[in-house]
Image 1 (cartoon, rainbow, N blue to C red):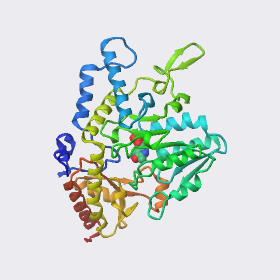
Image 2 (cartoon, rainbow, N blue to C red):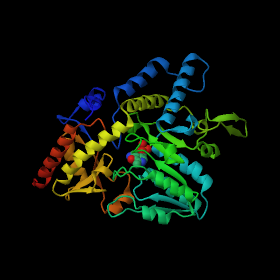
Image 3 (cartoon, rainbow, N blue to C red):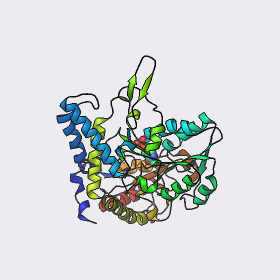
Image 4 (cartoon, rainbow, N blue to C red):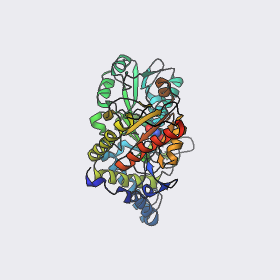
Length: 412
Ligand code: PMP
């Protein structure tokens, strides 16, 4: 492993914690990532030295805060290779971004009889907004199904993508299966049918290089808290010509051009979508998180996480009675491995692991239609990050064996 990844716990003090007297092994990175000192210090510094509201004052502090806030917009644009900072809307989260797109853009372009195509592996936040839009507009929501190896069935996608399809909304990386979908190819197919493509990059943007122009994504959404920044800050990228057409869905301070007793006009995008005082500290932290990721390099981060996944995967498949969901290939898992252990309830497994200091998620992962397709109520999910160590993974596998013995009285 390159030296860059050694001693990262200096940057992430939480990784030095003990849980139930055991060293913390944090494997719930798909739910939220940990936040390095560099991000926390940048936010602290902002509040200690430059705190003021943005886009309002003419005094020095307000100008500094506004400049810093807008500078991060340039950084986000560069990070995903957006054509302009004006194509970056700050939101609360991926969920907030997807709701904005489905409500504003969806209402604009979807009409009765149209089809919206999503996949069965979507997180609820890239499913329910489209389900609601379909209900509002008397449109049809269709699902692309899985292949036998639980990757996306591209033949099914090609079959269901027709001239009736108005929007294709798809995750780049599944938060359950770990598979990364061929977004560039899907965008091309969608555009051949005059459909728009909305990409949920919540699980990809911190783990691989994402280039919105290369993908030709019409929209792309992600959350700061899954990429080393804090909760409550998200991004909605949109092609400038699409954002220009879209009406705002929230109204109030700062998003207006002028207001009279009977009418109001809006600012241009992205500001027309940012009503009220935004999460300025969150934006500042997002800038620091992008600096941190960029300093290591997205290619290096991706390679490191692939290496860790390749190390862990065979160790898990070797555990008797452990069923992994998704592909049998480690390379198709992007650091996310969902599994069940015999007939043990996933919550019991996760609780047992927690007793040993290992933090994993158990549940339906906000993907109930996918759980139904997999024929389970819930799974355990381990999701890693570049700051995890090989020792973390060894402890995790050892803890699984101990949990198995504890609950089932059996060892491999
Ligand atoms: N999409 C995917 C694929 C996710 O994994 C998540 C978070 N689990 C979301 C969307 C929603 O992200 P947030 O809760 O930050 O809005």
